Length: 453
Image 1 (tube, rainbow, N blue to C red):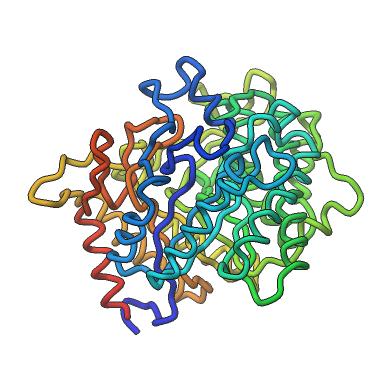
Image 2 (tube, helix red, strand yellow):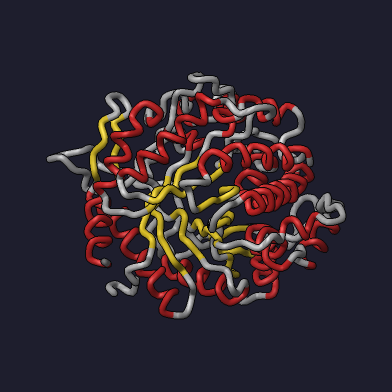
């Protein structure tokens, strides 16, 4: 045992389909909401899109060899829904599914464990046209799609994540409109929350029923640690609301079979309610084998506006994120808060007992220098990873059942609304040549893993 991690601890790297694959119109793939959103003027920095991205669809074997060179044991990737099931309905597309069949075999042949994420935001455009996640039917379509993938890969893939970051799908996609599909409706976002969770539960139930051997089924949530900026009652209340909408609205129904009463009351005060039907919460609370935790930064919240008012223009209580003082920031403007990571993991262990944790994403974007002498001197990222992995060790020392850590991301890629302007990779990608170069953070991560074993 070294660095606080046992030999059984899982080390990995993570990616998502739309961010790296490219080949958006090959082998029967149809458009996703991100293909459409990228064509909206001004939606994506630089007018970028994922048409080519990292060309992983054509470079997969070499990328798997790259992953193996890092010494990790697990590769978390997502499956493109419109590649496997064009349009989001009907039969499987054999050519599209064959890519993930080959990827799985390539990983296993390299001694790597495949960790499948079924949905990382690439909803087929036809399903968005039919209502998207605010429509209940989408949950059932997702379960159908999940079974297409499960039927093909479950003989070789042990670990299955249904959804990645449903908060982003619901809040950024349907309320703030900064992610695909770009809607701006609070009611749509709240309906999407429920139907995303329902889709998770339906898919998990069906996969578990069809399984012929042991599998690990889970969901991945992105969670900060919402803290009050001061100990004033207004700030404490603002942090409670932020935590309710960011964390507990997902984890409570998943783990406890009920939405938090205070969140339901807050929604009612806005004239909004979750579209719950009889039996939904039993489906949503289908037992999990693992909770994927994506963490990037903690947040402080205030219950007053900069002008000192306690309510916004609509008369609702203020919930305002305020800067955490004296913290370095990443290229995304996010504060570096490793101690909040420890606090979150310990809190999850305490408040949701019996739920093993895997860090399915953690990393940072920085303005890296260009490659030189065969590497990239990304010392800010290296330090971010070092302090956050130490934070995981601290959480484990305090009793948190954290069983793995996957760095985000394997390589620089299409960073959603930021296009190619932000680089999260521990491997540098030259988008003109598709040349991959290990950054110093990748070399450090490789050496850490070697020492931990």
